[in-house]
Amino acid sequence: MENVTIIPVNPLMIFPFAFLLLSIAVIPLINKHWWDKNYPIPSFGFGIIVVIYYFFFLKNIPRMVHIGFEYISFISLIGSLFVVAGGIHINIRGRATPHANVIMLLIGAIVSNFLGTTGASMILIRPYLKVNKYRLTSYHVVFFIFIVSNIGGALTPIGDPPLFLGYLKGVPFFWVIGKVWHIWALTIGLVLTVFYFIDHHFYKKVKEKLREEVEAKGEEPHVSGLHNVLFLIAILGAVFINEPKLLREIIMIAAAIGSYFTTKKEIHERNEFNFIPIKEVAILFVGIFATMVPCLDWLQLNAEKIGIRTPGQFFWGTGILSGILDNAPTYLNFLSASFGLQNLQLDNHIHMKIFLEHHWKYIQAISVAAVFFGATTYIGNGPNFMVKSIADQAGAHCPSFFGYIIKYSFPILVPIFAFIWLLFFRFN
Image 1: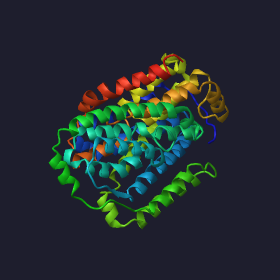
Image 2 (image 1 turned 180 degrees about the vertical axis):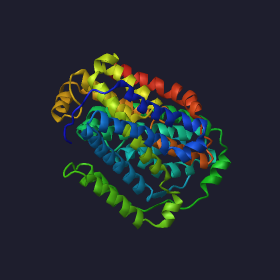
Image 3 (image 1 turned 135 degrees about the vertical axis):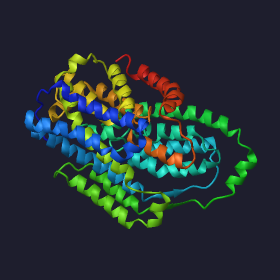
Image 4 (image 1 turned 60 degrees about the vertical axis):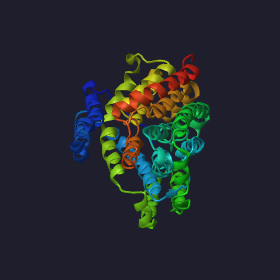
């Protein structure tokens, strides 16, 4: 990753980024039909404004080329994992007891670090819904989003998009797990404990006769499409390739193509696999990557003016915006700000080494917050809405956008995250 020159930008150029993310959050709530057909308009529209500004006004073309390569890396990983996950079908037989659900969610949390939160969510959501079908309620889906689609993927750059962006910026691959594993384990334990008591309460209300009837039905347990594990290994291995440029992405795309064409049609049909979710992510993130460049540059040059200085403040700042907006660009914005506070530049390898040696607590706080708080709303992380859509079709009756926050995120996640802040970031 070559270094790039940061040129002062007009603060007004931050508005395309803000308007795009506001569009993503609000328009689907106002007119979902219009959004489903026309979401490329705001993404490309706001994105082209920034591209024109950098090309013809700042004349800083290398800056946009640099971010373009980062987008290609980002979408290659997310897309390839999505395709490979769509070729693996898991069928589970039996009743879903509270203990079984806890084990399943814990496995999902671990797997999300190898398949990504998107891949793990797409593989596990359908079998999870199936074994809970006889007593499926909204909280089953919400806690799946909490744990598998978000918090679980906090240990590796593969796990969640913000961490992969950090890896692209120079954060070593295994640095995150070394600094975050204990925070991850405690948080997962607390969330699963809350889930167990809720699930146990409602499980007791299900008549034993109904549970026995359900247990006696269904297909034998099996896994289909296991050959896709080989393509998954290829993708994981490619993550470590840095040179030559784009070789990593070519391998990922080739693995996705190989997976798609060697997977039986019936497996894709069982998974209800299609390219609509990843198409939407790819188009929206074109705009996000383009419009966030002025924000990144402004934060690097004006970090001292925003009044956020301690790791604890970065934890809450990153977290709140990760839930309201999107955790991937929020991660980069606050990472840029933390570098700026130390008069360092994010896209400089030497500066990254200095930062990791002397100011690593900031990256720890930003990484934890970006991943964890992505669970607080449906728009906090890419898989959230995909899981909701699949669950709605399965009859789970998921809560509304604000119902999700008021009934689940605020009373459950916020106290747990406040405890994490108090324990690990308040006094540093």
